Image (cartoon, rainbow, N blue to C red; front, top):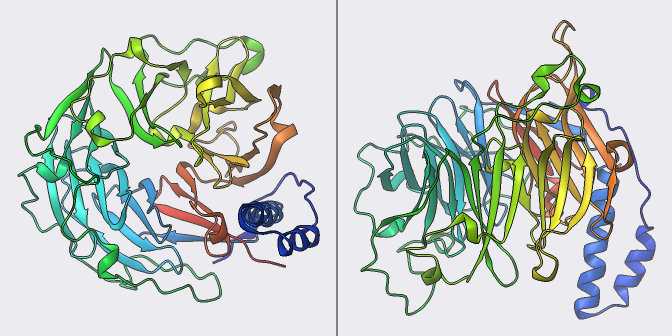
Length: 472
């Protein structure tokens, strides 16, 4: 159901006339027409962000203690969530029809990722120390490997052939197709779409039906690059052995490189903030911070297989990040910008955006002071890199207040051409006030989808709340 009282947009911004843009697009061709079309999308999203909660709905997942992680398929057709009942659930984005439930993990799956080239293949990492690769169509586990420690994060290389896995103080690389270990339990007791296990969202209007085309699956899985000979390579190698627990690993793509990010827990506790920033609220200090490293790699898979990383050779390091999982930072879809939450002991918590272009790597582009930032659970760029969505995971008001509402989400405008410090009020596009506690918040990967699904967040009590654009 729609729940407009749960969201309070706090700020609006002016945008160019859409009539001007449409006239310009009519006379444009090729790249110029595509550029104007992008501006029309930006205009449309800008209009929506003036009142993003006009249409929002909860989807309660029955029998789940919590919703831990979310992921979209690369084509934006499917969505997956992991839950405290040890299951993975897959939905269609267009109409929220339930595709299937995947079972097989003995403990909670902590992380989920779709294969970069197929919506029907996904991987999960679990507290049961295993990583599983699933075939959604057959509801079966294709491969499984035990990493001998709780798995906190996984990431597909852009080829889809390799998974990076964090387990304890170690980060491993797994050529998962070469593994001989597969699931021994029936992984997917497959309730189909509309099974009743999850209540479908009613947005008013029917979504586009998504078929399970055979050619959309990987089928017989092929190597990503022609002429690649990996049969002699070991299935699992250690990429990094750290001094402290590894929090996340992530492959991201730029126009020219495979970007590799690693986040390791800092050995020392977070610095205490000056009294004028926190007052008596000592709980404002997070339980830990992480240091984030970046390497730029050749995009070919052969350059990564067997890779051993030395943190001293990282091209970029951020020393005090507030991050609980790989959802705590993001790279724009163009690969040019990095967004994260940083703890500065002198000025407090800040949303920082940095350049990832080689000629200006690490240059600060925008810094926004953020209130109550220890509880940030996710930071994500919008599809057109015009904004950053921030999710909060704990109540940010005094506990004595009954049923308090607070900002569960904030959306911050990103001005990539400006290098300056700003307050939240200067660039906040909107905030969603609620009593929820968000584990993760994500934009849909395609801006044009906002009429069906614009962004969503997962809550600690097992619900998922989604927002869409409904033209006036």
